[in-house]
Image (cartoon, rainbow, N blue to C red):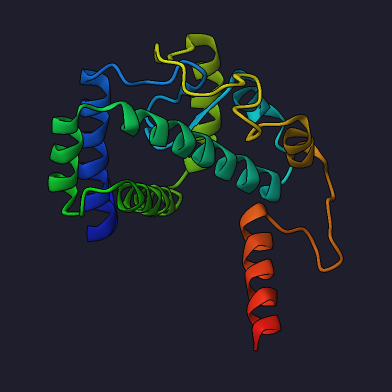
Length: 194
């Protein structure tokens, strides 16, 4: 399934975490799970976009939004785990058991797993198909994790959705993703400090 050891290790630890979250019934009700993609989740509005992604850039931004939604929900879910279960996860992952380290590890593994799976033939087609099916099945948790269920506390606004669906977006030097813009801002800040 995974093409390198880091992804395989992250995948094993991710499944361990998934079992703990299910056991403790610590799942967010505001987000919908996507079968076969335990590191991606969305709202109905986000998942329904699957059939309207007209460019590779739109697909990339949509995919990154699904990952960010999962991470924000996952951070809340992890905070609901029993002390024993969070310690079990930290031991399994081989990390120090404090919130910042746990979040860092989970975010890193999410990126590693997604990066590895994106190499698989038909990844995006399969994801878009599963996202469409997930909207109909609506598999969610039972716990409230967000104050505003519609925007997931500002993560999924109308502006964010419109930007993904808008064809031909550009910003001077061509179309850039959220992550690319953050990297550019970081580089500019570093240059300014020199």
